[in-house]
Length: 324
Image 1 (cartoon, one colour):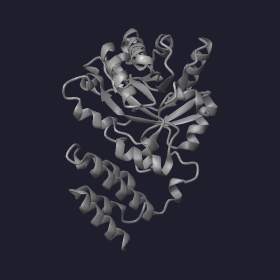
Image 2 (cartoon, helix red, strand yellow; image 1 turned 60 degrees about the vertical axis):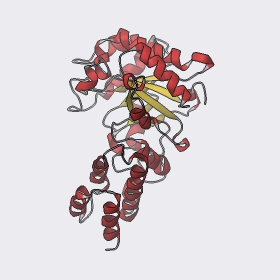
Image 3 (cartoon, helix red, strand yellow; image 1 turned 90 degrees about the horizontal axis):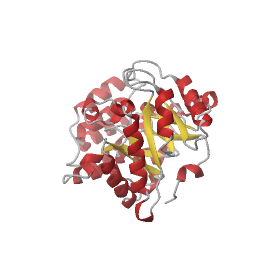
Image 4 (cartoon, one colour; image 1 turned 60 degrees about the horizontal axis):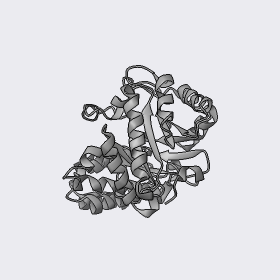
């Protein structure tokens, strides 16, 4: 494991966003196989939960394979002492980096003072970064710490709160270019990504700035880098049904339907193998909606897949479709 792998990557850097109940270990394995990004994130995991007696139920969300490297563990919480402990755990699990979620708008997360609630508490946000860095560097270890943020909570306060975060010297800050109040209801403000880069440069900070919001594919990501001067782009929702998203060799439109369905089935078997008895099989159905679109008979096939109760039924449906 490198002390700071970020410095060794060629820019621009294109990374996979952490999406709860989407980018789990099964889907990341598929993405790494068919269109690997430069860096991958785990789903976010509760720091408080990981240091509690019931942490075994959460550790599975930190499962990864060597093919996913570099792989970053993302945590959420609001207690510096727990971030220290989780950083130690991440180092023991040999992750390449740690990321702190400071942008999730989920009410249950915010009630803990975590996620997007940290936009209102930049002092605590900086303390969390520092605690995670100390944990990552304990006992002679080294691991870069990054953070994913928004422009602000009810209003854009980037000019005030980004400098305070930069004082904590995170390796990377990924800026989702909307406020918490805006959710994803308005277009991302990519002009503010350029402003974030300027703030970083004016402060002579070494922190990398990534942009996030509404980017559909690699081509658009490259355009955003040229427009803003950011160091990289994080892509999230575009990955649905398209594990080829980050590939420079394959375009989704050129992938035959037969291959898409075969990969969907491979994804399903892997989900069953990793999460049987742990996660509800219905979580796979949001993927089926994305895989099965844009061709004659797609609606009818989706209806059948939505009714499937297990991997065997999905296999039978796909094999029937492929035999036509």
